[in-house]
Length: 307
Image (cartoon, one colour):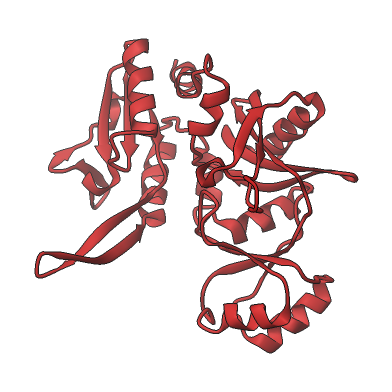
């Protein structure tokens, strides 16, 4: 079997630890590189100074194409800078497509390289997937927001999300006009999406791999909070709902996603997708599904695709 190219973000825990464990257990040969290790020279790609021989590569798995670095002044940390590597990811995926090398969600990401909360709302609509109504403005001017809220039929409370946030961060609940004006004061050009607040006592994370639902996790906010995320202290538990699982699998089929962690609300009028996460954490999920190896399932899919 050919080698697996595994590209991570450099953290020694989380996805790197899980996928490395799965690779070792399967006895798969692999090359590990951080996104920050990659270089491109013409049509060639390098890990540090070593050119990648794609004839040796059977499949590729990669973590989120984003990295953060610390800014130092006179040796002291003065903040951080985020690098968004969607262009680099697109170049990598183009090479893989040309050489017929499989990577999960390869063709989806080639079609939608700049995938975020704004673009995914458009994808849901184009694929007739029930989701929370989502509004995005290219200019967060007060008057424009008021006019488009009226067009969309939005009323307070409203949820505002920065398009590139994750794990419940950069998400705000806005309850009145005064809070809205304070919120947008310094966010004229920030990429934000607006959604009506959906009253709920929980949401659900469903993980789909290769057209199969691996399980459903219920997430409930801790007392006094409104966000259900495990990363923010929410409670998690196993949940059984066959119809929700079918809904999640069908959503992935429509979008042609190989793997996804779908966040879902169950409402009186049916299910609504909150987000379809292509790069999702597993701490909460595997704390309730302790006998389930999600990384192993993903690796099995990659190996099967390479045969």
